[in-house]
Length: 410
Image (cartoon, rainbow, N blue to C red; front, side, top):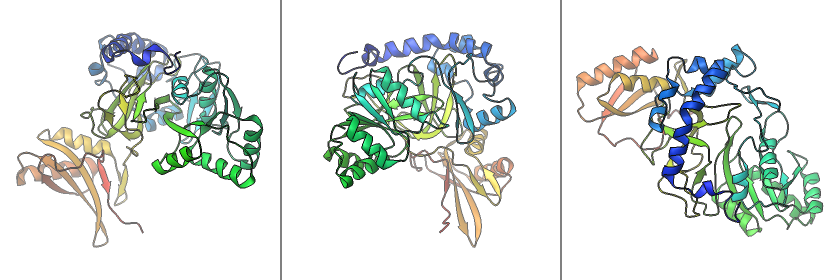
């Protein structure tokens, strides 16, 4: 560890990082298939030995959360996707979906996010994530302790008691949701308790609006954020540069068109898909269900891994039309049936008190005949009639939407 960086891996060249990650893929996927029957089923027919690059990885199927939940229901508790023997803790997240705790002192790879937030050995950290059922509290707890901090396991609620503890323990840092930090600071101000020891925070699990960050800065607390999930741990984190989120080491992150596994061009919004190298609970092309986008270049802080814009919404745009669910995957299937089309967007509106759906398609050579063929595909794939509008390439906004529900429910 240096004062600025958690380790030297954060500043290695992009080529060096990519070569190291690609070099691990084939052996890792081979072990996963051998040790986890759920993965063996999911990747049946694919040659692990051929997966030696990011490009080759994109040929594997994406695993979506609803599929994982289905496999867990069929084969509890983990659907056959666990490759290790356990010995730690198990958790239940909303869904429900079950996750095991991995091995080691920092199984969710949180330490470098804590370091980037300014946490240092000897700091006391006030952790207001929940320790009940879900892994949130322990995710941050383990990361802070991995960098040498002491952690007060505050959990959620009991605001008055938490502020009392902060005034007595004098923590240097806070972990929790962005909005609960305001609750604590307001409570301290209202009761006259001194919590001025708090100077830094690492938040997650909610939106950190610019005005909120500025308010905390005025109160003497520098707040950085990280993007984490129960399945994968910390995927990306902010540094002092506060220009996007830096992808964590030992992860391969892709941004794909929602409903597909196809990578989008750099800068375009899409669904975040992650591959890790966790030997106990591996995830290979796991779709988070969240939208994000890649940022060009490296962070001004000197860390060289790719950056994402952070959380930009949900990728699961499934909607119900005339009593039938329509999924982004179905829009992707229509696109594959008509390769002469570019980007597609299914819009849903109300007309004369009826649901109306229209598939807007970018197309360089529109024709009535093509529109009729696409309309037939819409009916075949969705079992619903829909209008088709062919528009010029580049007409659709680059916002990650595949299904745009414009109905007014007010």
